[in-house]
Length: 301
Picture 1: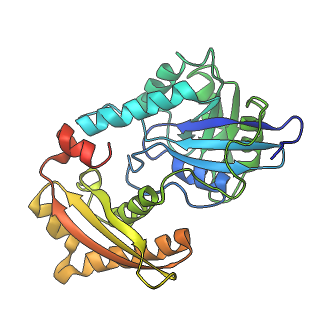
Picture 2 (picture 1 turned 180 degrees about the vertical axis):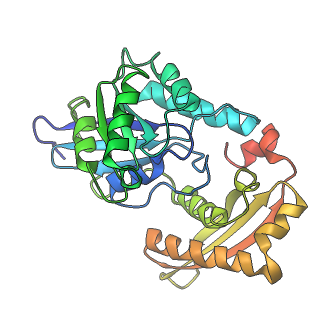
């Protein structure tokens, strides 16, 4: 397929401290759920690519984990994912929520970003403007000017769509000219099994106690159409936790919680695959997997 003259294509990524609204913004730009969102920080564990198709451009957004000071081997690996991504994209968006003061975490990331800003433009994105008063948003834009030198500053809200298209335009303007990188209908280049595992993990994170978010990992063991039926996909997956006590939390009273997780995940997976799904979930204890290189490798980190 020949792209029209002046067509641009390339990569952008959002960075920011955990829970700055990066995944919600990625989904808003792509117009579909490709990155899992949760009110738990450090929900994103892989660099997920969402693809924005326009007549004049194809923008590939890489949603990265939140950069943080790591306490475990998993934490270090997540930070490595972030820095590797920065090195490969054409433009970077630093996300800072409108309703929270600029803090040491934001300054730490900005300081790291200033090392790449000479060769890669960085756009300051004030997110979650729907949660702040207009004067708060204005103050945040002023505060960000002192943090580093941005190519642009833009306030947005992924929830009500405020200036999401403006942000897309700012990104596209900084992409090189080139043909489409992915076929027209694709919204992500993640393998389906990875997305399915992420959707299960999102459902499992929803509502668990604060001590659990980083202790849950999901591995899809088997996934494929049921024999003799093309309208049903069988999925067998394991939810991994680090301790037996956590198994009880995820399972819930008489297994009620796990049933809810399964039902919620199945709804999103069916929407993703466009097919009925049979989902079989089991919980396994993998002791201290976040600190064990062998277990991290097996779980895909």
